Amino acid sequence: MKNARRAAAALLVAVTLAVPAFVAVPAPAAAQGAEADALRAVLLESKEKSRGVAIHANGATINAVVVSVDDRYVIARSQQSSRIVVRLDRIDGVSAFF
Image 1 (cartoon, helix red, strand yellow):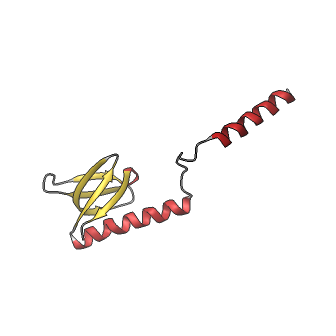
Image 2 (cartoon, helix red, strand yellow):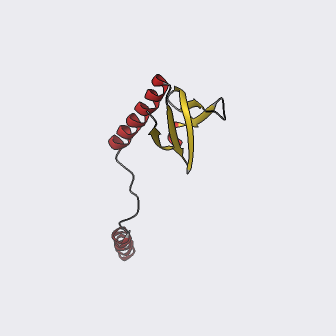
Image 3 (tube, rainbow, N blue to C red):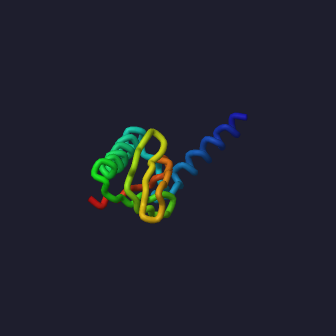
């Protein structure tokens, strides 16, 4: 039983050290909070100035003007759509057109 535990521990260490450097490691909670604050700041600025933003979500880009932002959703409008609802946790990035 001791040998099996040692072998498992050795295997775990070997696999951990063998992970390539390019594998994405999640950012610490503090960094994620700062990213969310910056994202929310750009979205709120779009709402206040009625200026356009490009919302990048899941490989798609949505050009729109933000109508409202709450804890979970961004509601926006565009020339093609009168109402666009995007979950905040699905947004990868935002580009401002100010």
